[in-house]
Image 1 (cartoon, rainbow, N blue to C red):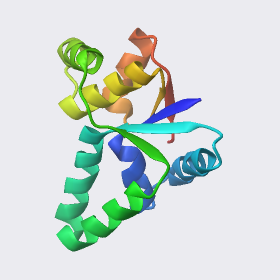
Image 2 (image 1 turned 30 degrees about the vertical axis):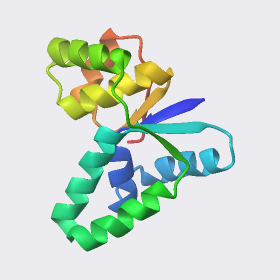
Image 3 (image 1 turned 180 degrees about the vertical axis):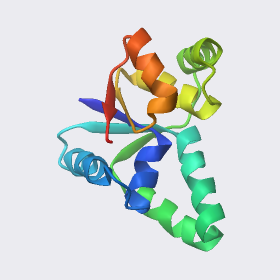
Length: 136
C-alpha cells in the first residue's frame, strides 16, 4: 500500500493533535517495510513554514531534520502528470494549490491521500476515484 501525506498529517504529529496516533502508526509500518509513504515537497514546505512561524527557524530546522529521518519518499519534481492533475483539480474544486499538488502526487504514485482536511477534500472524495485515509 502506498500512502501520500498531506501537510496536516505531519502537523498533527508535532502538535499532538487528534488522530496523530494513526499517522504515527503509518510511519511505523513504513519503517517496517509494510507500506510506502510519499509526500510532495510542496506539502513539506507548508509544514516547514508553519513551524517556522510558530516556533522559530531553529526549532523548525530540528523538526525538519526529524522528518527527513522518517521513512518518507519526498516527491520533489512536478512532472507532467502532477502539473496537469494539479491544474485540473485546482480549477474544478477551487482548492489551495498545495492541496492540489498533494492530491496530484497521490494520483501520480497511485496512493491513498492521508489527510484530515474534510473541507477541501470531502467534495473531491465524492466526485473522483481517488482513495483517502481520514485520520480524524
